Structures are given as C-alpha cells and as structure tokens.
Image (tube, rainbow, N blue to C red; front, side, top):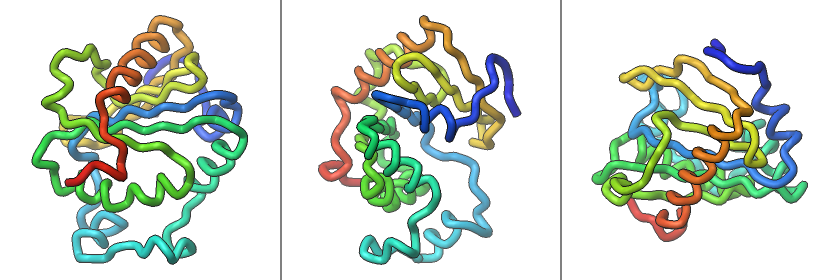
Length: 176
C-alpha cells in the first residue's frame, strides 16, 4: 500500500544509490506472526550459525553486499527501550547477518534520545535526497510506505539519523 508521493521500488532505489543509504528504526516491536516464520523459530530456540551462511543468506543480504561493493555506505541505527523487548533480542541475535552483508549497525537506548528531534516514523534516506517512510499500526503491523524527494524531509531525516549515529553504540560493542 502506498500512502502518497511518488512511486518507487525499494530495490531499484538502493541499486541506484551512489553514496549512502541510512535506515533508522525506532520501534521496540514489529508485527510478526508468532506462530510461524523466523521469529517463531527464534522463540523456540533456533539460532543461526554464522559459519553456515547458506542457511541464512537471503536476497536482501545479496542486495546489500552488491550495494556496498559499489562503494555505497549502508548504515542502520536502532533506537531501543531498555531493558530490550523480546523482539529486539531477536533482531539483535540476527544482526550478524546484516553486518556480514556489509551494513554498519548501531544501537541507541531510547533514554539517550530525549533531546533529539526525530521524525515520527522509521525511515530510509538514499543519497541524502530520497526518503522512504515506513508506517506501522500501534501493534506494529506494517501499513505501507511513503516516498518523498522533498528536500526538507531529506534534510530532517538525514540530520536526525546523524544525531542518532553519533550517540549510538556499534553493534559489536552493544550488549542486550
């Protein structure tokens, strides 16, 4: 569902990026099916072996690896409440996959964001010019995306991301 703005395809925008792609995640939980899928498997005790890449490598990882190989810096920052939710533990346990693909990932406790101006929605910013907002219900159900090339939105989001990035802890140093 597209809420408004121009129509873009995520994979195409990332593939056309030339300098940077940054992603800010600010929710403690995203709607997932607790009965099936990777989250349910994780809850039942399944953990991926970092050395068994064929068991967990997905098309997303290939896209990121190809993007990084072209010289694009891909960064992800996660703002989390502490103690972290079960869902954040799940994300944390799987972040080695993002890192293996070439993403730089950092974590910032929510209590350290009170003086930061942050957009109301998770977002991606590509080359400081294209923004993709993700919209979610209160229960974390994905409602759709909104794309914009408005320079003010790109500036606000890029600035917010950089402020979070400066304060955040690199994944390898953050402990849940």
